[in-house]
Image (cartoon, rainbow, N blue to C red; front, side):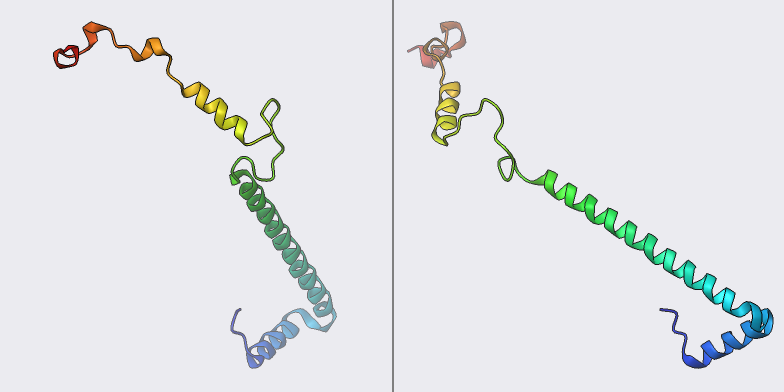
Length: 109
């Protein structure tokens, strides 16, 4: 992660020992360990919340009819919706007849 090898680590620990002294060094190490642990826990919480959000978004993107309960009032069989759609798309006979003023002269003949 930081590309710190063993010699660099020994130098850093030696400087820390000189600066803080042998009595304060264990307390500093304990505090550093706590900080790293809290950072890892916070990172895991963020990962978990992102995972939950992506799962929620994926569930919302599913097409209607997959893993969802049927809506109230919808027919149960698959043939009934097709029949209902055909009935709704039927054009009444009156609507099929075009009034003479809307036809072209070629259609009137």
